[in-house]
Amino acid sequence: MQDSNILSLEQVSKYFYTSNGFFNNGRHFAALNNVTLSVASGSSLGIVGESGSGKTTIARLMCSIYKADKGRVLYDGKEISMLSKNEKQEYMKNVQMVFQDPDNTLNPKLTIKSALSDGIKQHITKDKDEIQEKLKQLMEMVGLPYEYLERYPHEFSGGQRQRISIARALSINPKVIIADEPVSSLDVSVQAQILNLMKALQKNGITLILISHSLAVVSNLCENIAVMQKGKLEEYGNTLEVLSNPQSEYTKSLLASSSYTFMKNN
Image 1 (cartoon, helix red, strand yellow):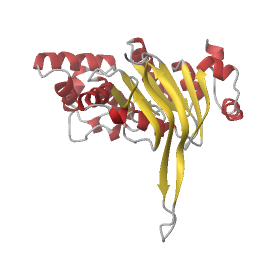
Image 2 (cartoon, one colour):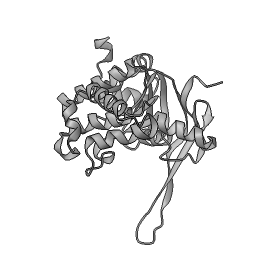
Image 3 (cartoon, one colour):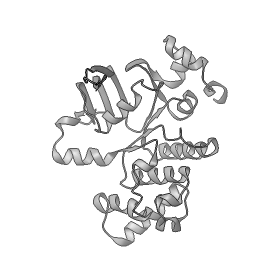
Image 4 (spheres, helix red, strand yellow):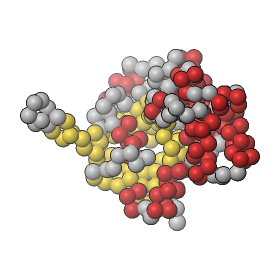
């Protein structure tokens, strides 16, 4: 029986080693310290906090870029490290990450068509007509003209490259999109376009995990929220409940210093 939570962290800790000086005398520090949270299939979770809070570490654990030093990371109720080969392939297909900088995922030597087609051929179909139809759907979904497929990444603006990065993640029909600060490097007008795209993904039933330093962004996109500080989970629950009645002094300080507008807009 599958777990209703598609991704979960159970008492997870993650440590990193920092070098200190000529003699390489460093120390371990906890990027995450005993964190437990989960994301139900088809729901949305915003993970907020300042730089160094551990929110990106959570994202990278969830998509298996990092491995937990303590605790368990679960996909559909099964520990990721214990998945069979076939289960691991299915997990890698279904959990896709969108990075802050789209240049991290787009090969400058490949046309957009090649970048989007590779995953489709590997996971969906090798039929040329079906691939063409899928490419049309993807470009329409992210609001870019079909003829742009023949262009290279350097021919696009930052916002357009981020849309293409999202299209690439969507190309293999994932169940989960993990977006790590997807709009922080973009102009305000372009940010709105990307966030509207994120809303559209949710309407299509995709589970969204959004990493952000902005309470305003998370409050308008995510039904649940996790507030992180220095590797610890400060608050976790329904977004409206947490932000309308924060229990943590840290959450209160974030609210006081943010452009939080959830209550006014809803």
